[in-house]
Structure formats: structure tokens, C-alpha cells
Length: 242
Image 1: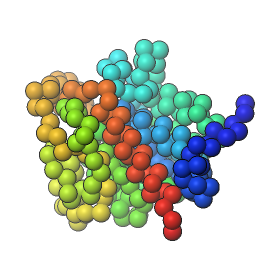
Image 2 (image 1 turned 180 degrees about the horizontal axis):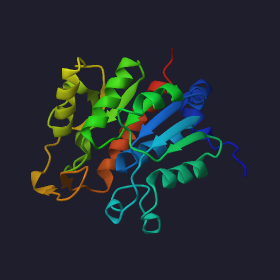
Image 3 (image 1 turned 90 degrees about the horizontal axis):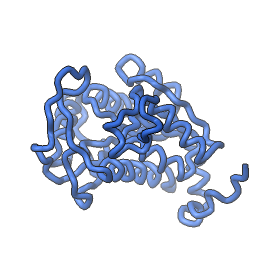
């Protein structure tokens, strides 16, 4: 298989030095749903040389409206496996580690220590592991960008990147901000969020679910847009001149 010049357009934009920095960088993506799956693909297509992807979930029919891993043919498969195969097909030369597991307080530090990452992308839906990952990255001085809530929103013009301290209108950002504040972290964490008020009528309470107390309505493009913002932040930070 010929891989000649597949990064030619990228190099024209970011220069040889920028492309070399991307090739030498290692990125961790946690969560491979509508947000994380898109972020992983765009970071891969930019030419990052090493990536670790983490997600324990399997593809379901309800993922098809918004997740890049979700097709009728992939329902029931592990998201990490589907995304891994896709990324390998994009760049077979990228060194990749696929972990089909939940990130929690027991394995977070181990994964971060072993990976020696230049950047971490947080696309976790659940609050506690999300906050613990952010906290651990801050303590270890590992750059991280975190996705806030993309559900119950439809206006792409309201999506932006800001410090966690400056977030407004986003319930998830508020919860993360409050938890981090109690841990002594009040600023210095980049997040992607929307200033659009959530449509409360699109939230449905869920019974019998272990990890989710509610299901939130989503539209095809919003999680993908959050993922694009995450990827843009990572790529632009990685190619910065020292």
C-alpha cells in the first residue's frame, strides 16, 4: 500500500516542523462516542504518530444518529475496536493502543504514567471519572481539553473553547466546575462547551440504567462539532512554536 504524500496538504498548511511535531506526539482519547470518535479521527488524519483510545461501550442502534462508529453493520461491536480499525485504515503507520475498558480511579494514573502523553482528550459522559481524569492530568501537568455537554442543543454558532472558569449555560460544565473547585482547581482547564441554553423538554428520565439517570436528545452534527473543536485545540497546541 502506498502512503506517499497523504500528509501533503497538512504540511502545506502547518509546515514541515509542524507536521514533524504531530508525528512525534502521543494523544490519549477517552470516550469514543459522538464527540470522542470524531476527535480521534480528526487527530489521526492530522498525522499524530501515537494514539491511545479508551471506551468500554458497545455500539447500539441509538448511536446511529450521531456516532462515527455506529452503523447497522457495527451494532453490538466494541466502539474501541470499530474506531481502532477505522484509524488503522486511515494511517496504518500510526502507533495505536486500543483499551476496551472504563476509565476509573484505579486505572487512570497507571494509563497516564505508561502512556507519556503530550495531550489528553476527555470525551467522558460520566461526571466522577471525568473530574478525576481532569484532576489527575492537572496534577501531572499533562495538557488536557475536556468536552462539556453537547446534548439538548442545536445551534452550532454557540459552540466555543474557553477556560472552565468562564463557562456559562452548560449544566455539565457547572457540575465539573464545582467539583474541580472543591479539589482546588478553579481555572486552567480548556473545555469545549456551548452557550446555548439546553432544551429541557428533550431530556427523558431513564429507569433501570446503571450509569445514566436520563437520556438527552441529540442531533447528528452537534457531538461531531464538539469533537472537531477538541481536535482543533489539540492540533494547534501541539504545533505551537516552543
